Length: 158
Image (cartoon, rainbow, N blue to C red; front, side, top):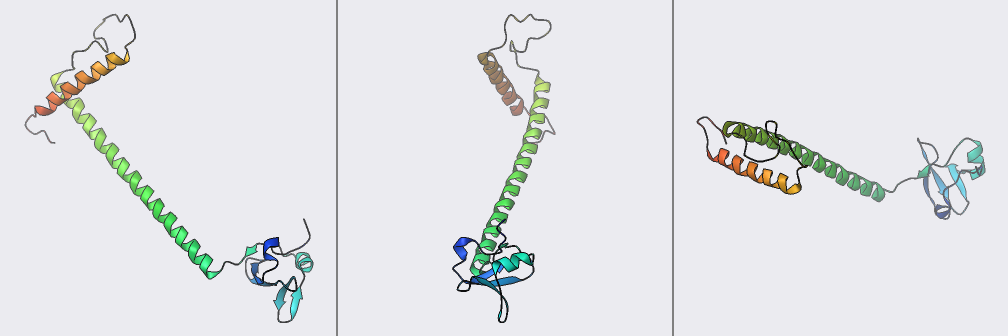
């Protein structure tokens, strides 16, 4: 530790307000390279350090504060947008789950499509199903679901 309480090097040549405590900012006088502690009262960086002060940060200008507020507002808006997107996704998931249940019911009413996969009732499988087998099964299921949806029973919704 240097034993000095002073602004960063790039700010030492500029008069300005800085935080040495969280309660009251202190004015740095560049020409004197000292802190103005009050009227005609000056404190060197070494003395401020001995008194227990530590340099925290420069005081933000009103323009900097306004820019920070604007940036925060934009981030909060982005956060709300993300939250809305998440809620919409949850609603879509719930809708899709209801649709899956409706399709399951339709398949149960008309029976499963005929397909070798998965094998039924004790058939012996000589090989693992291939991507083509699964694609064929999906096509059969799609056709069956379409047929089931086209045939609506009294009281069916949708």
